[in-house]
Image 1 (tube, rainbow, N blue to C red):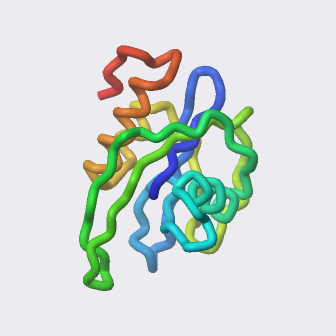
Image 2 (image 1 turned 90 degrees about the vertical axis):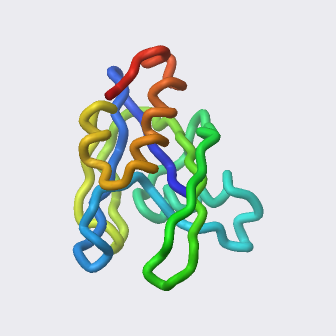
Length: 138
């Protein structure tokens, strides 16, 4: 799963930079389902708290976008995209998986994401935002 966190006016999205050992690319919060989670909504809440320290989340939204990719371990991984709103932009408390963060306008965030599947999820988010409805963030 991946979770795009949005906050502020105008809306900005949080991106996290992976450690060099994990690829060194920018991404949203990401993680995998664990049996203790029960459902993907619980996975999103747990991963957001683990990777950023943020909670609670408001307006958790299923972006109706999923994709598969081959992992370094040889397995195929399926990612399901979500978005959530935070009340105010704050500095996250980064986990050891990330080295930096940035709150970016949607258009700028699109240029930071390394993978087209991530960019498509962010485009879908842009069309769901109240202030961004109908705008093409490309």
